[in-house]
Length: 194
Image 1 (cartoon, rainbow, N blue to C red):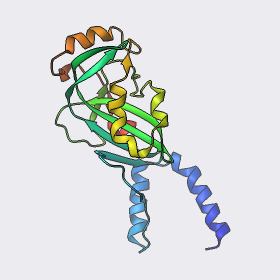
Image 2 (image 1 turned 90 degrees about the vertical axis):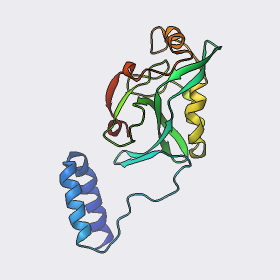
Image 3 (image 1 turned 180 degrees about the vertical axis):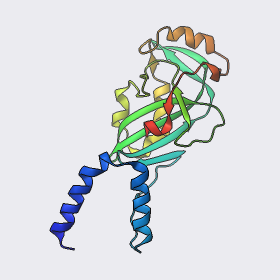
Image 4 (image 1 turned 45 degrees about the vertical axis):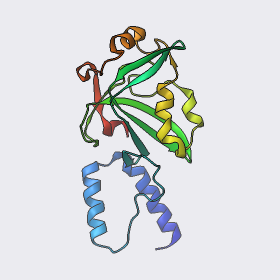
């Protein structure tokens, strides 16, 4: 096949993919792969250290890090509050080149294996929007090598009531206690965030 024909096919496919049925597309790709010996790579490259899960789709690659359910020292307007109960958390990053392009933080139920269809819940405290995106411009300066540490840095930054009314009251209610998972609010599946 000539280069010009290859470019025309690539152009046609790139315009059709957003309108295709995912199940049909997957089945078609599997049939094509079965009929040829040509290897089609979906992902190759270095996986960042400490990764708990990775999602690769048409919107890019998402790297997921787990923060176990724990008690964390937080700051409210620069005043430290020790041992505030937090649910199990997932930090989800997308990269542009080597730099972090987006960061989301969500809560998940304790002990559930991480998978695409698992339920995710709103982070219960401040500075995280309803869609899971963090309100913290600081993450944009970080690189792939620092992914395991970014969420913990975010959790240690000073907070206010931004995004959650009565955040100080929530901190005080959960000080010295394990977080009660029945209080987290569902908003979708992990797959929707990858």
